[in-house]
Amino acid sequence: MIKICKIFYDNEEGLIFNSDNNKHEVFHSRSKFGSLLFDDLVFFGYIDESKIEFVESISKVNEDTIVVIDQNHDMPEKIYDRILNLNPKKFIFDYSSHDCTNRWLEVSSIIEVLKDKDFKIITKSVDFDEHDNLLYYDQQLSRMIFWIYPDIKFNTESDYSKFNRLDFSSTLDSFYNLKKIMNKDYLLPVKKGIFFVGHPRYHKIDLLNHIFLNGHLNDIWWTSSDINYDLGAGSTDWGGENLPIKDSISYNEFEVLKLLPKKLDYGYESSEHDLVSVGITVSWPLYLDSCFDIIGETDFVLNDNSVHHISEKTIKPILLGIPFVSLNASNTLFKLEKNFGFNFERGDSLFSIDYDGIKDEKIRMDKIKGTVDDILKNNSKVLKDYSYYYKEKYRENTDILLKVFWRESVKKIGDYINE
Image 1 (cartoon, rainbow, N blue to C red):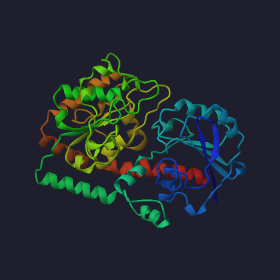
Image 2: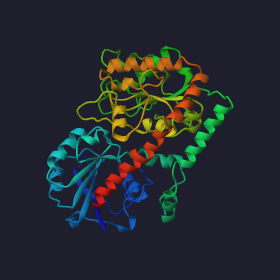
Image 3: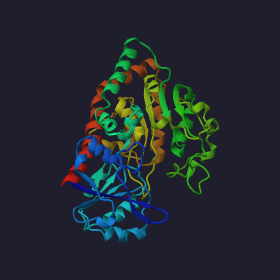
Image 4: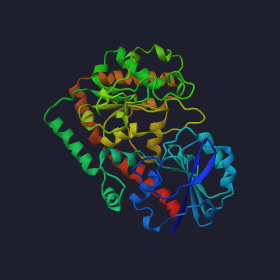
């Protein structure tokens, strides 16, 4: 048996408490085990569901128990002592099931405090190879199963068995076949590209404004949330998020802001909701009716508390085999190549990621703007042909995403649990 004690804590009160059962809702209401990580561990067969025994009280933790700490909130200092007083077989700090990326200082502290313990930190940082106590996991592909197969629920064991038999292959094959038909029949896409801005952070609006001023906004499918949506405490606009690009205009000077929010698809045109969440779904018609994706990742400049990471924004074009231009922190794509084996375009090619290696954020942004300009100068026929060529040339990236980035990462966590 694998004895697991799952610990949750309330950030405001600083209290540790244990889940009452294995169906505790953590990230997704359709998660069976209260964690997408554990859903994936069972989904791939790396832990045997029938051999999991959930320990329902912290007082029952012993040397045979694996303690899993769910890192939904910043960890208050006063709970460290309570964790250190436990003597389990292993500790697992799960930062990934809640998509936590900007808490590196806390992670560094845990590594130092627990240096004499047996523990692993599950992280979304693609710098995971730099420390022995870090294991990589990204829950986005697990979430995408719910988007692609919306009828899946975990109300019964039969529902879960149905989920176990599903994968992306049939849907991706259908998508690829439609792309081939469009190429064969010389149908041209309605738009040249896609740019789902999501949260209107400075670097994303900077590029969107550039496209707008150059008269190419009508060449792309694009969406953006309202500038007041989801602002952090004390923030008046998104211009202060993730460090504005130096020597640039102030946030409120961007002319494209007058067009926000931009709603598109999924009924948001008539909705009162401020968030345009099309960016975190797979909109098959828009991807079929365009040639490339502009990825607006959360971080363009890192600080001491943030890490190199990606989100569903980068995963989608890799999964679908679509060329892309990416707004990300420098060397993020390089680290994906180094640590997982992806192969992206470089050199003089149309979708070269050479900008990824530029540390200076202003120079990197200018390079990205130039890349987007060069792409949009081409007509739809040229871009459609290139998009199909790209999909065939880099088809292996999709396999790497599913087999190495996702499955192998989960396997390493399963191996640690089963040691």
